[in-house]
Length: 285
Image (cartoon, rainbow, N blue to C red; front, side, top):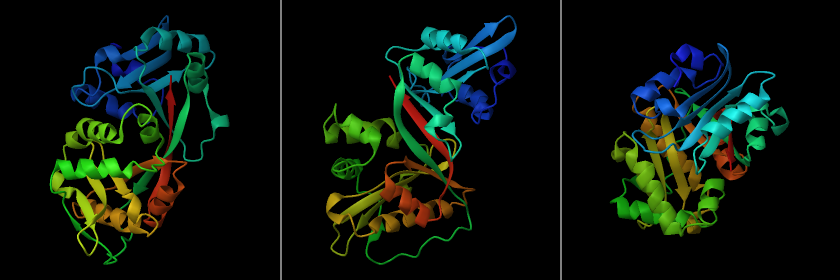
C-alpha cells in the first residue's frame, strides 16, 4: 500500500474519492493497492475491490499508466495479479468506443485479458416522472428466500445478461441463482422489505424487482420477468415499482446497469427516465 493516498490518487479517476472509505469499510485491503515507481514518480497503479470482509478480491477496478510507461504497467499487473485473476472493470465516458481504449486496455491485453462485455451505467433523478401502476399486476414482498431463488432460477431461461450466460456454462440455473442470492442480494445493507414480486390477477408470479442500497448508491439491483410473462411490457411495471420504492425513501438518485447488448432492458430504462451517465468495460482472463 502507498504511504499516503495522495500518491495513489495522483491519477485522476472517478473512484479516487471512495478509496479511503473502502479501506475503512474493508472493501479494500492495503495489500490490494499497488504502485509502480521510478524514483519518486508514480508511473502506474492498480487496485482490487471486494464486498466487505471478503478474503479474496472480487474485481480489479483500477489500472492507470502514465504516458510512456507501458512496460511499467505490464510489469505491475504481472507482479500484482492474483491467481485466479478476477474480472477487471473500468468506468468510461457514455460515448466510449473500443477504439478509444487507452493504455490501461493495451496493458491488460498484453497481460492476457480480453474484452468480455460493455455495460450501460444508468441514473434516475428525483423529479423524473414515474409511470402510474397499470393494474395488470400487483406487488407484494417475496414470501421467503426460497420463492425468490426459485424465481431467479426461472428468469435465467433466455437471459441476455453476459455474466449470467457465462455462469450457466459452469453451473445449473439453480446454482447460479443461489450463488447470486448468497453473495450479493442477501448482503445488501438495505431492508428486504423493499423487495417486490409482481403477481397477476390470479396471484401467479410474473417477475420481481430488487431495489437496494449497495453502500454507495440506491440501486435497482435485479429486475426480471419470468419467461411465460415476457413480451407484455411488464418490465415497465416492475421498474416503475422499484423506482417508486426508492424514491419514497427520499433518495438523491437511483443507479442501475445493464449490458449494451441487452437492448430490451436498456429501452425499458430509457422509457422510465434513466439516462446513461457512464459505460462500464469488463475484461476477463
